[in-house]
Length: 335
Picture 1 (tube, helix red, strand yellow):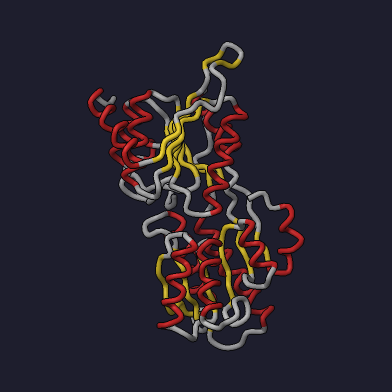
Picture 2 (cartoon, rainbow, N blue to C red):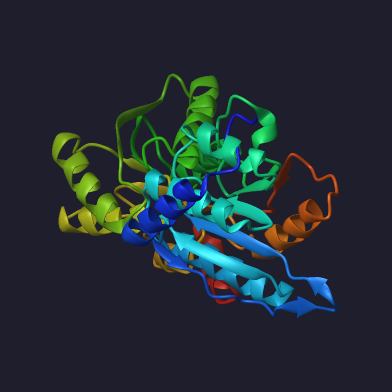
């Protein structure tokens, strides 16, 4: 089991479909052709977390474009950041007898029941972006996504470079903007960052305040404003994603401070708006988390449908960026 990230009755299927229609956005339109060289078109049911950030929007576009390119029949649902919506969507896909189910889980726990239903229906499940904790490793086939714990470690290591470049001396008082409570990236990014902090900087680094901003700009702005009221002497911000960092920048400026100078900022994701802020000197470093998982996912879906063996965790390739790299990198950013 990764640290991360019976057939339904007709009545259950109908209820699930009705519930999904009531509380989640679903797109049942086919993105592929009805046949490919005489072979049956693969039908993929995909449940997305939501549309809470630029990263997530890029991830959704990548999945939809890759499904169309592969000629798959994609059934897409937006869970609007609610686990109950995702569970309804997955049950709806089971009732429709799709070939493969993929989803990016809102939170880590609480999936065993619906995953057991998918297994009983002999529909393989692929996780994307985020992991889950289950009682049975066989309830899903693989995870296609990033190593969030390592992203947290990378954020701590790049903060070392940021502090050196800024010529910072003395105590490092860190404000942490956490992602959605219970979500794998929030849990694991915090874990990886603290791992490096405790091992190498116990004497001089301290997280003085930490709270969820729910991965949104509005959340980042609101929570950072509260941080500055309760802890006006923070000099570092570690944000679990760029959108929260961008929201926090607004709060920092409203408080009369200079982001990137008075408060050094390290964030994770690497969306275009994050690179713009970095090129303006407002973010000091970004740890990349690649959202363009669509092509990898479609390749895995075909292999799983064909009964091929795939790796248990298919990791994405990512980089880290300092402020002085932002302007050169910005034109080539695809999300």
